[in-house]
Image (cartoon, rainbow, N blue to C red):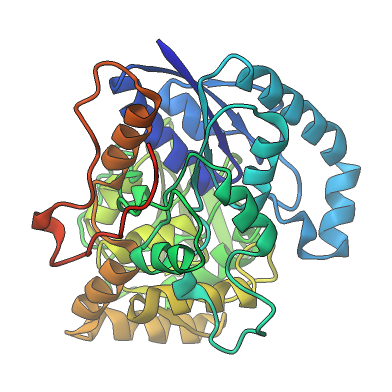
Length: 410
């Protein structure tokens, strides 16, 4: 079997790479993964061997967000962990026919520095739709260094058509928009015995949850007459405590794993391994997440977000996500009263869901990108047993997401 190495740098990136892994395995590939940030638990669920350290660091991968984050990660052993991950990457790449990179410039640089095999790059974290029109002329969504490394890749699969067009206009070779695999990376089918529709709480997997989840819970106290609220928990650790709330675990390993209960009678369930179940029944979402919010937008779910102290959902990140997701995302103050008011508007505005759907399709495209990308990688590597070339997005999808131009060599 053809062996491929997956490299990713973040929880959302791990989920996307694991989704691709399932398709690549079906195409006849043997797989291993090196997650550059965190524990890479999404690979476990996909049955992919994980190589290198699997430790967490305080910044959650945002060590350059400020001196405190950098110092905290250095004290937690970031340098030694990074060296060990790179050694694992180098050794595994030496036994692989190709390297599939999901993430940003850091993941791409890590692969370029350590792998001497064809690199297939999915810049899942960057969209030109998120870029501010007021940004200085010397700045761009992809800097000169990243574009230089992209030019050396066997193929580059941008997350949306606008980003593909931007790269093609700057003569980056091998750019091929085949759809956004993020929409195929919605998993977690555990049952939750709570009537839908839900208000979905998405505090994220970074350190932001300690700040954002208590505020979401307080907003739920003001929304007791609205649909039930459920926390979609994907963190590696237990959900955080919240002042005034009792957190009681259930005996279930998946599905509803805990309940937050307030003295005034408000109750909010916490569910794990149930994200696909929850988004199928969600009417709106409160979010300080990255990938999960973008997936909700792609499904036409109105989202309310608010800025946290970090490490991820700081003002710059939140504003960029708002530009990318357009009318699917409303940003407001972190005050529980403001959050509750924004959620109530989203729940009762008859046009909110349709506007979210239109904006989400513009930003996220349509499902099926994971299949197309996996088939294209297999074809380029000459893996036997593949079902022909991937092709661009089919005519049946054209009304929702037009195909990008192909200019990559096989």
